[in-house]
Length: 176
Image 1 (tube, helix red, strand yellow):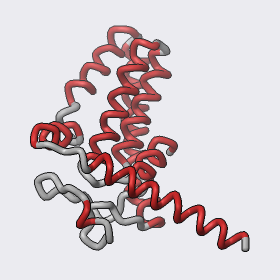
Image 2 (cartoon, one colour; image 1 turned 120 degrees about the vertical axis):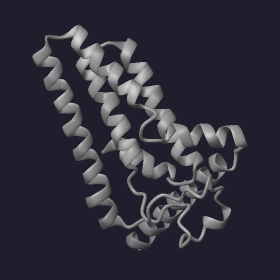
Image 3 (cartoon, one colour; image 1 turned 135 degrees about the vertical axis):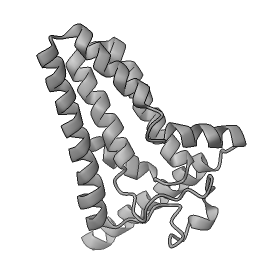
């Protein structure tokens, strides 16, 4: 009886996750398609990363700034590898846009981008929230915390908009 209740509750969460994804993914237009694709891009954020490094070197001794940058790189590599190489393979949850996923025909695909086969948890979410939390800790100022949180949230939204992650994938990535 307890197992049936647990499975029923889990299925309800999965259904809500899919409904929320389809609602967000369904609000699309050409301009937003291009914008969200750019936001999810790898290299568009290089100026942000360079700006954060410059801020560190301006606010801290060069040794501390260099240590923070090394810590950020290690954090991002660990986050990315734990998500992509360990948890995703263990869980095996198909991305919404994956052609093998039953909801795939309902998902709006932008420029044919579907991502890899599995999406739980989101490495974009883990990396962006990991960097946001680290920068908030390093600078300990609300002036950096809010923009970093906004950036991480925008990154997560773009992943749902593009149909490559469920909200639950993003929440799990953030918690990781």
